[in-house]
Amino acid sequence: MKWIRNFCIIAHVDHGKTTLSDRLLEQTQTIEKRKMQEQLLDSMDLEKEKGITIKCHPVTMHCRLQGNDYTLNLIDTPGHVDFSYEVSRSLAACEGALLLVDASQGIEAQTVANAQLALQNSLTIIPVLNKIDLPNADVEKVKQQLEDILATPSDEALLVSGKTGEGIGELLQAIVEKIPAPQGDVTELLQALIFDAIYDSYKGLICYVRVFNGSLKAGQSIVMMRQGAATQVKEVGIFTPEMQKKDELNAGDVGYVITNIKTLTEIKMGDTLTHVQRPAKEPLPGYREVKPMVFSDLYPLDTKDYERLKAGLSRLQLNDAALTFQSENSTALGFGFRCGFLGLLHMEVVQERLRREYDLDIITTYPSVVYRICLTDDTWIEVDNPLRLPDPSRIQYIEEPTIKAFLHIPSDRIGDVLSLIMEKRGECSATETLDEQKMLLTCLLPLNEILLDFNDRLKSITHGYGSMDYELSKYVRSDLVKMDILVHGETVDAFSSIVHRSKAEQQGRALCERLKDLLPKQLFKVPIQAAVFGKVIARETLSALRKDVTAKCYGGDITRKRKLLEKQKEGKKRMKQIGKVAIPQDAFVKILKSDTMH
Image (cartoon, rainbow, N blue to C red; front, side, top):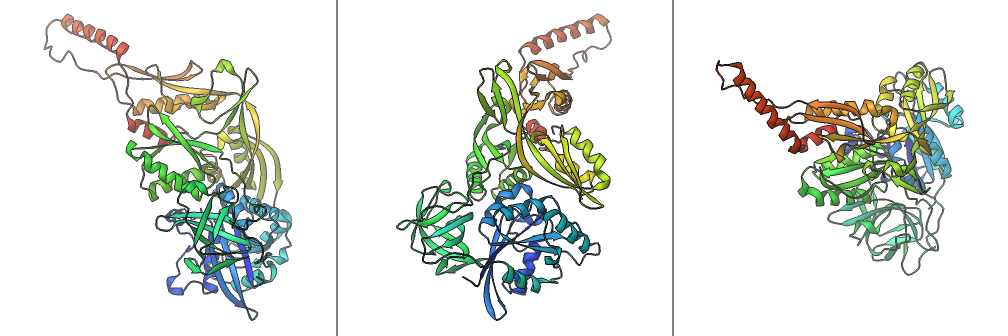
């Protein structure tokens, strides 16, 4: 075990983690030059397109240093705030972490958050400055930031370039010297942490594990300590980065286990594997239930795809512990699922994976958060869907979730960013100057307000230099109302939302105008209204289709035309009383996809 080193790379999104891991694979000759490609560990098309890592990817590398053969187990982690749970599971499987900082951008929001996660897990941190080959790299300034913000001695920082390969040899040397060898014992009772899993239609369930104590081999009977599911081990092996079969995995190793489990609900991320005959006394730390923060309904465009959508969500949930879903039914959109996500990027990625990997066309409703409602009898309920909001006469007050956001922004943009925070009903609690060009703002914001366009607007205000990290804060009492949209006097469930009273009129008007453009005309006038607790706050009128009833009158007395028009008027009046407006499916799709609703 003293020749094994387990480590991960943590950084802010787009600071060059995946490129650096490519160079490490090249330097240790894990991958032949002819098979090498950019972003090798990012296996999903979606990861390559967006330039982000979504899943953690383990890989085992062998290298000879100082006359000894070392085994280096690297786990490449995501950088985005929505995938921090993935990062926390990866950190639980390692002894050390490379803290990667872009030498041209400096320390950003998620760099700090991930460094704190690593310290909580008592990992050895090696600071690494990447992209030193760029002309605008400012190494001295970033070294100073390391000391000021993270209290890391700047002389310990290694200078590398993931693009050119400069400094990679020294980095490997530092990994071997500074990161401690794993502690554990092959003779002890088996304890292996499941930090990820994938489903293969041929092999079944494949668990990514880190063995802390004992050993694992094919044919053994194992049990999940928290779920209680027992199974047989069919195969064990390591990642190079393809799966490579091995006879056994011992304490300190990182690899995969193929089991007989076929039902996806029997496994939970962060669970501990142990032997059925000689079970370990207690599971490993590193398992925690994550609570989704953003909810949205997913409906298949074609109702026949309901079962396929269910199967797709089950498989995604297997290696994405933060995704939750339950059946939902809507009069307008049919059968679907109420899904819970960690954040908006997480929601976007799940939808995109359903579209690509399972070939599904889906409609998504307006995202919402979990509100806490105090009823008049002093009992509390939680509501994540506007339709489940109780009658206003039973509500004492409503509390909404807030987040504590940390914004790293250029100093010259502070005015614009503060006005954005005010517009989103937020308040800035602290400002801190990091250096002559960067500031750190700490602010409290309602989660509901940052759901849709906050991050995009922050990026455009700061020309891409602003970054945000956030953590869930407390629930705050707020003046919230349920806004309904009525078409011809009938409430349309799919468009209901919970909004702040001060913004209800503006949002209601925008939605009514959008619907007026999208709904097909009827033979009578159709009122489109936005109402808060039964009181109309905005209205648009869809004009009637006009049938030219006077077309057959050539000349003659004007009274003939008047008579026909009066008759038409009576007919329209009668039709308005009994007429119903059927909203076509594509109108729902267009509204729910449109930016105006945001």
